[in-house]
Image (cartoon, rainbow, N blue to C red; front, side, top):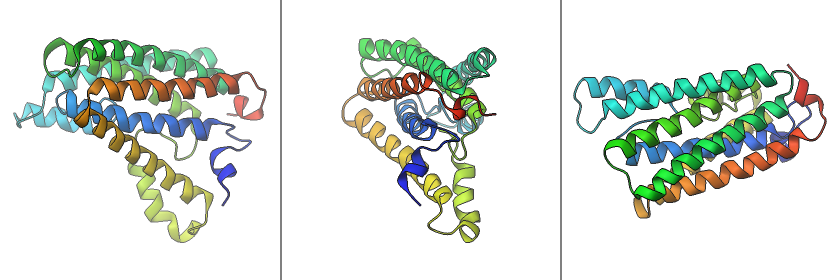
Length: 236
């Protein structure tokens, strides 16, 4: 197993490396949403549906309105992602670049709110951040799903963890597939850890600043990739 084949190959070009950046983003924004927005997921809708059920059951500490805003925002974002897919379906490089531009617009909007309000805890600020971050993650999920890079969902790790445990005997410890899965899990873990540290010891806005920086770096890489020819851009 070689690092270059793990992060870049002819079939998927720079997408594995860039999607790791978005995986870190998922960890950070969910740390922000859970710790600052009333125990709500903006990226992991499986968890968010569970939180909605808990809120309906009047479990303490869960906000039904915030979770519903996040769910609606995610669906809106997925719809936006679907429109991008329809427009750039023949060029994965342009599709990914367009999705990164869209994500950057929404994280900047969320950052403006976060910086102006400091640590949001109640009311319109929480709902605004929930829906903006969820739209951003909905766009990301829709496009990443279409790109279909193996094990690079950027948000859901359930099947990734299942693959690590279930396929280890067949693939072996030195396989690129296993290494990729482990790296993905670690990157999201680190993202969540860093996001939590920033929220707990500084502010939610500081975590959003880091998120914006990472998305900007991924966007730069996506734009560079979209300018270079390659079979990965037109592969089905």
